[in-house]
Length: 159
Image 1 (cartoon, rainbow, N blue to C red):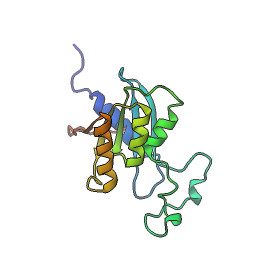
Image 2: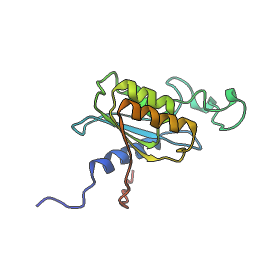
Image 3: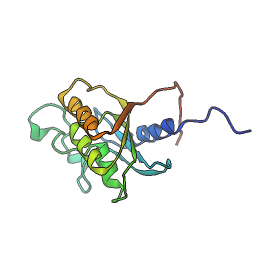
Image 4: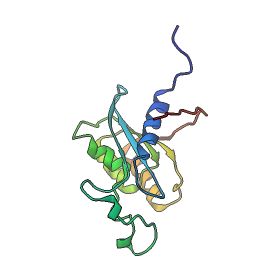
């Protein structure tokens, strides 16, 4: 008889997205993403951070101030990094698990990549123009999006 109470695919991949966000150096918002094919194989993962080759200790991580002195014009979002980290693999029909609902810029990249399902955890910016636009874009593109359903399981990894 097989073991019971094992984690679901959604729990597994959202867990990987949450683990990935722990690599982010952003002091205020950490976002992780995990892209999976229809056969439940991980294609790629990513988290928000600086572009490759840029020393993140010299990076402006501020949220407020003049645009050139904040993180927003420089940071690569977790979804973008996951798509770029896929190495050009075919993402048609894939699912992306992301810890925060995608912004409108990442949503355009998700659509262009061929991803067909978005599973997100937090939707804390739901009432912003960017997320409203994201949902409109996903609806127009016929991409399914759903909020991750928590089951109250605690998964701990000691390293």
